[in-house]
Length: 194
Length: 194
Image (tube, rainbow over all chains, first blue to last red; front, side, top):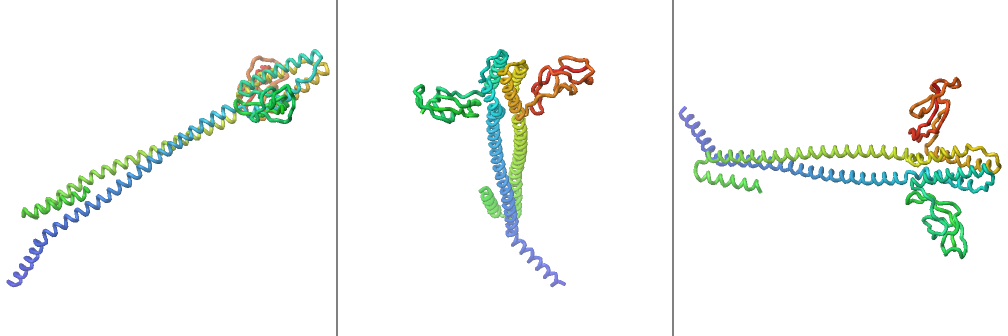
């Protein structure tokens, strides 16, 4: 009994000693663990912050790009709208031009009768009114006779050789040409002095 | 850096406390301090994470809004472009209509002479060609005589009382009306049966 007790005491003492001897070490371990945890947590949250900062930067860049796209689209759209508005009459004008050609040709007939002359006068009035309507939308005939030949406006279909005009000057209009504002919708067919 | 510094501080604290001899207590204090610091740092970084998360959410919302604005603008623009294209001939057509009225009036004269008849024939041809050009752009005369009066297309300027037509039917056209596709560009002036 006594021995047993002693033994136990020794054991306990040993344990105690061991514990007390290990105490500093054990505490150190706890601190190390706490530090490791601290570092782990730090690393984890630092990673999260970094990740979020990258995300914010990415979103900012996308916003900037989107805004630039939007601005470009708006600018392009405005220009297209302006061009559309400017030349809106083109399609109808192009279709009316052959009728105008015939109108002019029909008025060239020689009339001697009173009713014929009266009808011709009425038609000349209608023609002028039509021309004014077209002009108010920016459609006008291209100048020809007496102006220097310009391939942007004139299509040379014949050549002349006359002293009446300078060289390279339009001497005759074979078919009227038309502009819509600054755009040629049909060049004039002309005879040019050599 | 911050972590290193902290680790060093903890170490220094350890050495100091160990020297003072009150080891266990000192170590406990160090642990508590380290824990407190850990919590502080945690709070700081957690705040940063939260702040960044709010920022990300905000940027995402802005992106969604911008995209929606852009989409709306594109949709509206496309519709406007379609409408502009559809009715592009309107302005010129409106200006030509009074000339067409006069054209028709001029052709109503009685001609008996040969040259007059020939001129009239030529003009009728020009008129048909013009009408076709207008029709190919969607401009057409509104139906009148014999059709029920419709205030969307007809402007009643006189009333008739005849057994020839049903009640509320157009009996006479006083001035032609015109449509551009589905749009009335000038209502027809008509006489309606009572």
